[in-house]
Image (tube, rainbow, N blue to C red; front, side):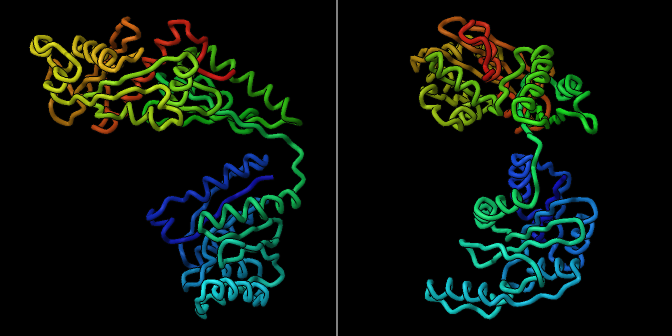
Length: 422
C-alpha cells in the first residue's frame, strides 16, 4: 500500500507559509510502515482541491488531507470531498452542539459561520477534534480511504496521535516491518556520496537510499522493508558497512545526529572543553555548538574578534604577525586558536579567519579564502580552505568545516574510534 498527502490553502501554494504538516505526516506514516509516494498542494478553490483529490484517488490507497475545515468562505475542503464522493453535505447536530459548547465555555456567542464546521459528506465517519472547533472526517471513495484533518498544526497533530493513527492501524493490516536510518557525512561531495549508494537509489531497491545536502553536510537516508525489525536492521547494517568502507572518517553519525551534535557528544564523553575565536564567521561556529542541548558542558567561551585590534587585545595575537602576514593567514589563525585556548583555559581552541565577500578579495587572497586552526592542548595545526558561494554560504560552510576539522583531529588522537553510535 502507499499513501499520499494533500495540503489545501492558498497560503501554502503561494509560499506564504511552509507546508510543515506534510513533512510531519510523512514522517509519522513512514514510522508506521506506510510509504508516502506523493505530496500535493491545492489552493482555496473547490475545483483545484477536487482535481488534486481525483488524482490522488486514482493512485493511492490512503489519502491524508489537511486544511480547509475552518468557518470562513474560503474553507472548501468538505465541499470538494463531497463532490468527489458524489454525495451531499449534511449537518451533524452533535458536532454543532460541541462547537456551541466550546464558545459557551469561553463566554462568547458562536458566530453563525461556525455552523458550517458541522457539515460533513453524507456517510462519512466523523473524527473528533478535542482541541479546536473543526472536526475532521474519514470516508472511502473508490479504492481509496480519505482522512481529512484541519490545517492548524497543533490540532492536526493531536488528532493524528489520539484518533487518526489508531484508526489507520484498524483500516490496514501492516504486516511488513519498515526501518529507517540516517547516515550523516561531511567533507565529501554529494556526487561522490551518491556514487557509493547509487545501486540502492534505483526504483524498487530494498533498502532504498536517498541523498540530500545542506551547506556541505550530506545525509544518506536508508529505508529497509522486511518481515520483521531484526531483518530490516540487518539489511541497513549491510549498506552502512558499505558506506563506512568507502567514506571512512567522513561519516559523522548513523543515528541522524548532525555535525555539531556528534562533536559535542565526542567532547563530552572525553571531557574536552572548547573555546572558539571567530572572525569571518562572526559567531556562527559557536551558534552551531550552542544549538546542541548540553553544550554548556563543552563550550567555555567564544571570541568574535572581527578587527585586528580585537585580535590583539582579546586573543593576544602579536601585532607583528598581523602586519607581516595579514589577518587572513595561517599564522594568525594559529595564534587565534592558541589565544582562545589560553584566555579561556579550555583544552581545545579553534580559530577561523577569512574573506567572506562579496568585497575584500585580492588576487593573492580571493573571496572564499579561509584558514581554520585547531589547538588541542598545545598541538596546533591549520588548514587552508577555499570556499565558493555567496557571503552566507561561505561563512556557514567555513564554520561547519572548522568544526569538522576538530572532529577529525579528535579521531586522530585516538580518544575515540568513531564519532558514531554503532
